[in-house]
Image (cartoon, rainbow, N blue to C red; front, side):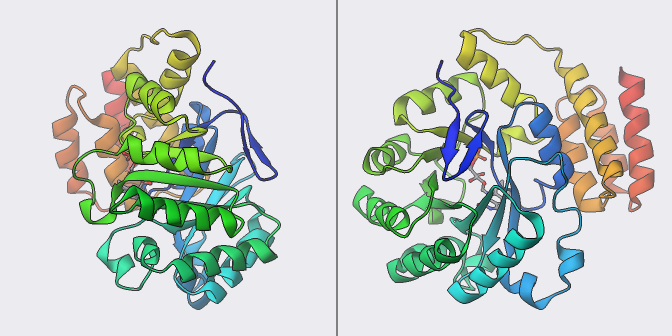
Length: 323
Ligand SMILES: Cc1cc2nc3c(=O)[nH]c(=O)nc-3n(C[C@H](O)[C@H](O)[C@H](O)COP(=O)(O)O)c2cc1C
């Protein structure tokens, strides 16, 4: 019994398998599907505090959440404590999420150039200010997501600050920002953070199957696991991991039927929530058909389509033909 409830401030989740925030991936439909498949807490993709305050909020936040989407976290990205506070207060008031997370890990240049994401880890003052500014005014528990730093000592300094500033949990992706996605996630560095803090620590990076999940939980002693890339086109991963951790046995699944079934459900959810944009369809169609018989042809066809409806039609036919 290694899967426990997770208590993040006043938020309690049914278990401790979390879906990672992923830009252009974790839209509402995808999150709902992960939830149906056993994700205990899901995060929106990062939302820029600046954009939220400057641009058309309605368009930016279209289909952000729905009543079935619980518990969920909204992730904000920014570098100004005041703007992040204002954006967080708006989100809290409007959506009442269970968690508000701050992105302090994104290494993409377009984010770090603006001093956001992993660039924040260069300034302890700013890390502290941002978190305390938010925890002072919000009713919602605040969590933080970081990457590790050059040395354990530097990572621990930041981790201690995160806790001291009032965050309710910390997620650690065990790669340094400059690694982007190269190398592997450093479980020893994550374990060092877990041993240092009293708030829940969530391990992230390279959890892709039953064994890696078991190993990450056991090795780090963390309170939860966050899964990102391995859930793309493979939302069933949450059920598989849960089953394995609870019983020590693998769930036998017909991969083709499972993937296509989930893909159909995904499309139905996109339709239900009026979210069938090219972004929400194209890459997900690639992931959900990966490795399946006939997937190369469907990908080629998808690449030539611009219209969401035509894409849905194509994918529906593919799914039913192959069943
Ligand atoms: C396409 C993509 C988009 C991502 N977007 C975000 C994001 O918006 N916020 C964030 O904190 N991390 C983001 N990440 C990082 C993931 O949340 C996660 O930390 C990383 O992928 C490592 O976990 P994994 O090995 O399970 O994928 C993104 C990753 C990918 C692949």
